[in-house]
Structure formats: C-alpha cells, structure tokens
Length: 517
Image (tube, rainbow, N blue to C red; front, side, top):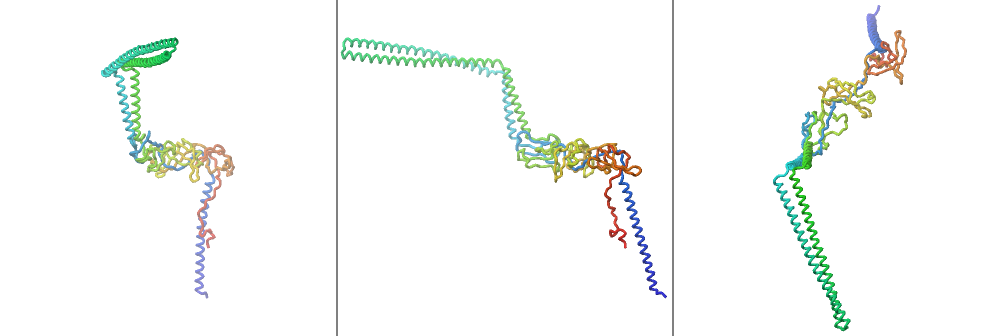
C-alpha cells in the first residue's frame, strides 16, 4: 500500500514540471516573436537603403555660416578744419538723429574773432570802393587847390633863392678878382723896386745898397705869397658860391617837378574814377568777401552736424579734450560692429552714425567652402531667436583670411533685402546658395564612389544583376549630384555598404536565449 505523502509529493512534482514547461514555452514564443520582428524590420530597411533611383529634379549647393546683424552703411563724422577743444557733446550712443542735427561743438572763440576781423576788412574795402566810384567831393577839390598853390609857392621861392645865389656868385667873382689884381700889382711893384735896388748896388757896392737889395727881395717874396693867398681865396669863395647856385637850381627843378606832378594828379582827380581804380577797389572787395566766407566756414566747422539721418553707434571723444582725441571712446550698447563702406579697419570718426535701412550680416566661411562663394549669389538669413527667414545677396567676399584657433576662415558679407522687424546685433544663420540647377538628371550623392579623378556607380538591372559604370558629374549639391553622363533617369543604383547600426536589443544578461535557465 502506497504512502499518501509520497503520492502527494509526486503529484506536486509533476505540476511544477508542467508549470516550468509552460513558462519555458511562453518565453520561447516571446523570444521567437521578438527575433522575427527585429529581423523583419531590418530586412525591410536594408532592402530600402541598398538602392536608390536616378531621377530628374533640382540640385542645389549651399554654404552655411553664422553671423550677427550689422549696419551696411556707417558714416564717420569728423570736425573739419583745425578742430579744437570739445565744449559740448549733444548725443549718446543708440540715439536716433535727423539730417543736420547738432552732434557736438568745439571752442568757438578764435573762429568768432577771425570772422570779426574779416568783416572789418570787408567794411574797409567797401568804403574804398564807394570812394573810387563817387569821384571828388568839394572838400577834396579844395584840398587839391591848396596843394597846387603850395607847389607854386615852392617854385617861386626856389626861383628867388636861385637869383640870390647867382647874385652872390657874381659879387664874389668881382670882389675876388679885384683882390687878386691888387695882389698882382703889389708883386709887380715889388719886382720893380728889386730891380732898382740891384742896379744901385751894381753902381755903388755899399753895405746900404746891399741891404736895400735884401729888403727888396723880401718884399717880392711877401707880395708873391699874398698873391697866392688871394688866388686861393678866390677859388674857394667862388666854388662855394657856385655850389649854392647849383643847389638853388636843384631846388627849383624839384619844386617844378612837384608842381607838375601835383597839377597832373589834380587833373586826374577832376576827371573822375578810372576803370583800373574801380577794378582794383572791386578786387579788394571780392578778396575781403572771400575772407569773410572762409571765416564763416571756420565758425560753422566748430559745430558738428549729422550729414545724414541715422543712429549714433559711437561717440569718440569727451568734453574738455581736443576733437581729434579718441582716448575715451563711447560705443553703442548693442555691441554691433560698424564700418565705413566695406572696410573694418578705417579710423572711426568723432561720431559714427549707422543707417538701419541697409542691414547686412558678415559671416565667417570655412576655407574649404570659400572658393564656391561669389558676390551676387543669393542667400537666406535666418534669425536665430524667431526663426524668421530673410532673403539676401552676397555683396562682399574678403580676400584676406582670418585665423581663429588655427582655423582659417574668410568673411562673407550678405546684404538683406528686407529689413522690416530686423534689429542690429541679432544672431543669425546664413545659408548661401552657391549653385542651383533645375530639371537635371540627378542621383543621391551617397550612390557615387570617387577615387582620384574617377567617379563610378553600381547599376542594378531589372534581372537583379549589377554592373559598374563611369559617371561624369556636374553640380555637386547638398544631397544630390548632377549626372552629365553614365546614368539615365529611371536607373536603379546600389548604395555602397554602410556599417550596420546596432538594433539596440539585447537579451537579459547579455546572452540571448542562452541566458535562460
């Protein structure tokens, strides 16, 4: 007779075995279902990804870069002329200004003084011109008459002086000639007395007669000396008198010349202004007017005005410093970079104005892509914050590279076509269309294999066989490449094998089915 406990244990063991078998069968069914699902999905994807169709459509090539919105036009406004010490700055960065608005001033003291001096010179020139065209006044005519009378009086006085000098010369001539004749007579008498004394001594050689000869010889010497003195006095006196006559003649000649000149001047004055005098006076007026205009310009240059309407981007200077000093530059709060024209290296003016109706983006394009970028190409500018797209055009491509962190890039300037709602300094993404063709034979770029100068593709025929063909390509777009020859629309090409991506499924414990048990 069997033991009830033993029978119960056998029944429980059978039930556990059956339960384990059921659980194992359920697990195997689940695993089989998962494997079938994974393999089925992978097969469909593999079949889809292994081939691509050659068709007709658009091929577009683009280059992307990032940048910020900036003003396409910046005007550097500087004080003209000699500048000066800044006395007032009337605008701040970010302020909108209209054309002609006062931006700043420098000291005007010297300029105002220069204008006052130039105006005084103009007034003097105008007065001279009026005098030239009006002719003589009665007072001027009376003055001319007095001048002629004085000149005539001088001539008469000079004639009187000449007559007096000539009379003095004649008198001196007579007086000196008489003195010389008397001296000559005395010499003759002394010589006669000497001859008589010598004759008496020859007749009677007495000491008395000899002394008489000596005395007579001395008298001759004295008379001859007196004659020489008289002649010398005559020459000196007559020379002086002649000089007085010559001086009087010169005075008369000068007085007569002065009288003739005075009469000629009076005659000219009586004839009225001459054309040459009026022209000279007018020239002086013209020159003075030019000087006044220059002085006004100098004064105007002490005030700095906005040549165009715009927004103040920078103020380079402070009150109390020379206008040319930029040691204390104030920049716009937006942080945008402003330039004059297309150059970013030009010296900033005292005030830099930007115009928001011409906005642009300067983006840095990688060295590998810059060869495809050209002026005139279309571009799309996407505002990073709002996602708004704005059409633009490439207007400048830098010829000199910029190296940042050992990366070579080139600046590309894109000018926006529509600036409504666009603000300075906004960050953007720029996509430049470097090439685009419509209605061309194209193929997925991944279907082509290029080795050196040779490009090939694997064509799958209708019967499933494949063959390799040489392909001549045209425009290489972002996803498609233009086919010039080697492939036709409707062909099916085999994509090169790619590394399979992991499915992401693992069995518990990492061992698949073998992990059970």
